[in-house]
Length: 209
Image (cartoon, one colour):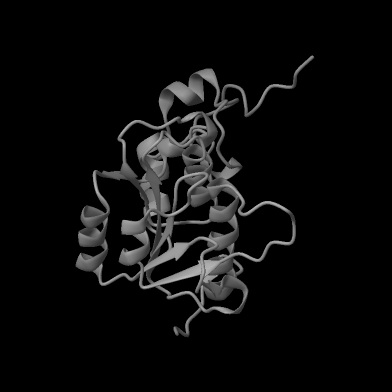
């Protein structure tokens, strides 16, 4: 028998607060959320997340309906990214996101140039992640505190336009026989590298680069 996820209806007197959802209190909360968000409305969860998101974004090219996008969104939610940006085709497979796209800001840009406009408005440099000639190793690089991490399509990697748009391109050390790892895995590694640099025990460091 499969164990049910989440919690059942609230027992006893209901808690007070606008962040609680009466329907969830009455019916139970079986969503894929951490315990502190049990019975909260979706809007309340997003608002609380917005108060603590980190100042970096992730972007991924989607010219061939990349199945890794859902994983990128899920990783962005887990690692506190400000937002996710999908460049190219608007439609993407949400299955891998495990419903985290409901709590994560996801934007669409038809072209790389439109993504660059979004980044330029915030003065955020674009850092590509790919194994290309001339790349700098992610393991020995300090990522900018405010930036956009850009990932390419599964297989071909970053498009030529994307490469030229990047302030720098970082590679992830690999030791096997394949040329690259998929964008879902690469995004988790790169985001965690940012977290290790700027986050400690859930709070941003006081000192900045």
